[in-house]
Length: 226
DNA sequence: GCGACAG
DNA sequence: ATCTTGTCGC
Image 1 (spheres, rainbow, N blue to C red):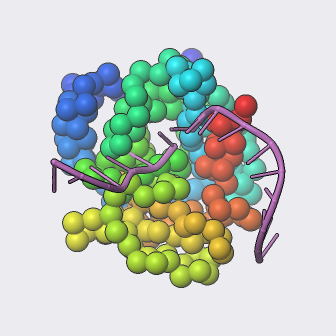
Image 2 (image 1 turned 135 degrees about the vertical axis):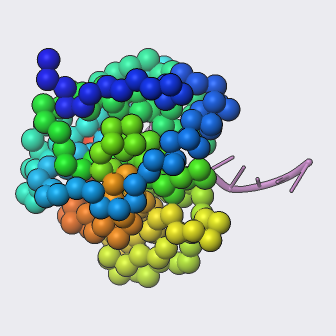
């Protein structure tokens, strides 16, 4: 059976970890993050997001595969899995990635780039959900967050496309990007195998008339539909 | 000690 | 994330 990604199995890279173990896992994985562009031509981009059912008992993950630059939807999949962990700020990936990986395995082709709902390196230990996914698959990812987890930033100019750096411990960890006028900005950060400037550039390239770039907007729509 | 805290 | 309707503004 053709899976877009091979599943990996490495020590201390599991999912069912106690909070302190998960934190240790993040510190360890953060060393292998690549913040340089490591991809060639982008012809397909995937958007991925998660939602919940039955008072949180079930995690629903949705993935949308889009053709670039047409932004036409080529495929979309939704999977449901038992929720294995509560939401703990800083440990989101351990709650949502297992279901997202199953959704990604439904894809017949491998996307050239993946946009994830949430943070990339804009995380206390530089391992937000987009980065965790990127390192796990060793594939280019971008974090597209709707609110701030950590870091500080100045006010963002109101024109579409303007952005200011998001910094944490004197380090630039992301961009606060105005994707629509008069609308709350997005928190963009590199996930893996991409630099900040390119991450912002690709988000801008996937923008139409909405606040969210199409890949995550479509995935959002599928993951939170009732 | 107190507050903040992706989805 | 989820519980939830209408309503103000571009």
